Amino acid sequence: MESQRVAYGETLLEIGEDEKIVVLDADLSSSTHTIMFGNKYKERFFNMGIQEQNEVGVAAGLARSGKIVFASSFAVFIVGRAYDIIRQSIAYTNLNVKIVATHAGLTVGEDGATHQMLEDIGIMSGLPNFRVIAPADAPETRKVIKKIAYMDGPFYVRLSREKVPTLLNDYEFELGKGILFKDGHDLTIISTGITLSIAVDAANDLKAKGIDAAVIHMPTLKPIDSELVSKYAKNTGKVITVEEHSIYNGLGSRVAEIIAEHGTAKLKRIGVMDQFGESGPGWALLEKYGISKENIIKKSMEIIR
Amino acid sequence: MNIEEQKEIKLKANEIRTLAIKMIYNAQSGHPGGSLSASDILSVLYFKVLNVDPKNPEWSKRDRFVMSKGHASAAYYASLALKGYFPINDLFTFRKLGSILQGHPTIHVPGVDMTTGSLGQGFSTAIGMAIAGKLDKADYNIYVLIGDGEMDEGIVWEAMINAPHNNLDNLIAILDRNKYQLDGSTENILPLGDIESKIKAFGWEVQSINGHDIEEIYNAIKISQNKNGKPKMIVANTVKGKGVSFMENTHEFHGKAPNKEQYEKAIKELETEREKILKEGST
Ligand SMILES: Cc1ncc(C[n+]2csc(CCOP(=O)(O)OP(=O)(O)O)c2C)c(N)n1
Image (tube, rainbow over all chains, first blue to last red; front, side):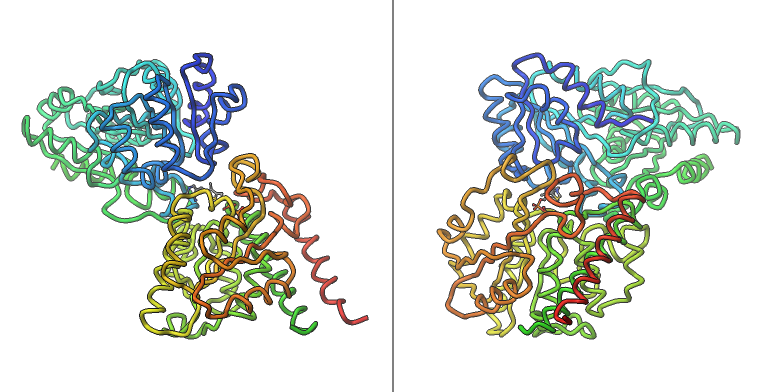
């Protein structure tokens, strides 16, 4: 188990020598771990105080002046509070700002619904010019951060609070490409973000029941790998999506669009069913809200029938 | 306020602190620092000021209270339970799966007037309540507690300009000026400077008090209740973590639960304080 946000902090530190890189946070640098960069590169780190709106406005100004800007906070605050500014000053302008948000989804845990962002994939994918990425684990987070630092234009990266199992040590990250983690013929489970390990566990249990499920990890939500989705929709005819996000406007919705446009397959979506979360231990919340191995297996049996 | 009354309110504040620490320890999550700094203010509000009825939490003529710094929910819930809105035992479900006592306050909890947790919003919603009070020609006041880190948020200043414009003399804001936010001291992260003058310049009537002196808190609120057309701000100078020595004047326990050893030490200190209060005036 490794923490994505620690991996983020470490990677910023690693690439931090580049004087074009500027990092901003909004009084959560000890939680997002941008403080690791801040402690070493004091002059290029700005803790803005609890000002998510001003943070992304300043990020836009820095980017317009040639800087590579990383701006962080919890997903719910940096996307929620600052959306209009992100839209007008970063997306429309197509500026070089990388919004890296931690504490996305239910696994925020005990802080409860006010802090559990479940709409961000939808909100950020709706913005032209933005690319949206949800890594599955710590190694992938490192690769994503290193890569997008030197890709022009705005990115949104969605990280979690909880430590997650490490699965992708040996996989490269390529923008817009899904990862076929396990091949299979009977159905396809597509996951994004930290639910990959749950999808893999489910596929292993399904195997024991004689069902051969493919598992695809989709780190890039936008641009999504429609080719891979179409191919597996066609080959297996049955698709299940899994995400720590609202059932609306996230991975499941995107996959539904692709399937509707490019082919036919049966689809079942697993995500948060148009409701707010609550306080509790992160992984227990995922179970309670049906983002679980058991629910994937249940939906698989339904779809196979 | 006479000595006996003061003593009672100090004891309640001590109970709020003790319960808050127990809740946070039990949940192994929550926000001790800002709960402890606000406990004396909450005690004065709930046990001396607010005209509320725990048997009828939604009574239309009640005073309103908005906990804009919603992360201090432990102290807030403890105050509500002590006031009689729900059983003290419920406090130990705090932050657990299925509990009504969510990590941050929600209006589903009896006695909670506004859902908070995203900083700055509570302050703005309190203005809405004050405007509604004016529209309804109601007699109740709206009290709102905000954090000094919270003052960083733009929405606070938008609300700050709006309140005098609407002549909201039914609005009494209390600023928990404990000088620490999440990542460090407010003076290092984003200094508020001469905050009293800034707020005054926006058209508010401002008082600056010791936020741990029961009588000062009470008197400041009494003065603020005058209907002179202006919103009131009480800058309560406080100590983050007040009452537990190793939590005082640091951001380390902003959002961290104590471990077993720390918990025991904290409870011991609060017990000693309780005994001290009990002895007051009896010599
Ligand atoms: C909009 C928003 N941004 C960030 C946070 C995360 N956060 C919770 S408490 C806190 C610090 C609050 O400091 P202050 O208002 O001084 O509270 P106190 O010291 O009284 O606990 C932060 C940044 C939040 N809850 N809401």
